[in-house]
Image 1: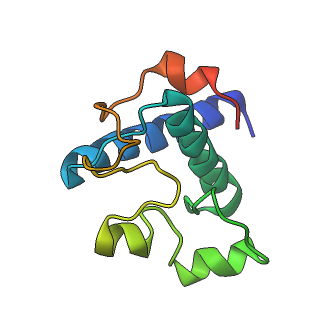
Image 2: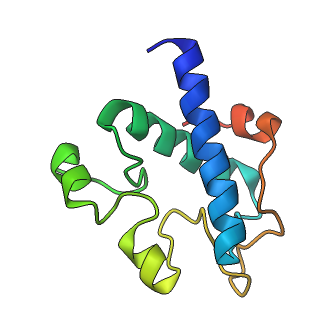
Image 3: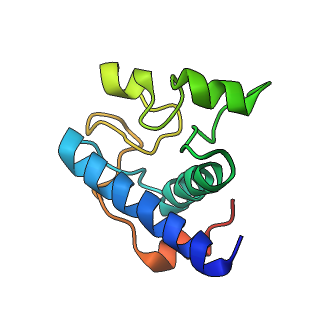
Length: 113
């Protein structure tokens, strides 16, 4: 993959996460590195698998999971109950919720997936 394509995918996942948080009234984790690592993982799966498969779970067969769509972000638990295993989208009443629905490029690029 080219660096330009990687950056474009990362930007798309960043924009998706920010817009989804705003639309659902959820917030990113108070620790920006958690948000950054999850967004990077989503971008990597988007490039490798064609879908932003949840990066925080173990899969025996990632391709089968992508086809099943249950764990494609936003996953079914998030869409149905606002439960995000990755702690990317956190409800305001959660002790780990920050006050941000956006992440800076500096924070996004400083964490390592």
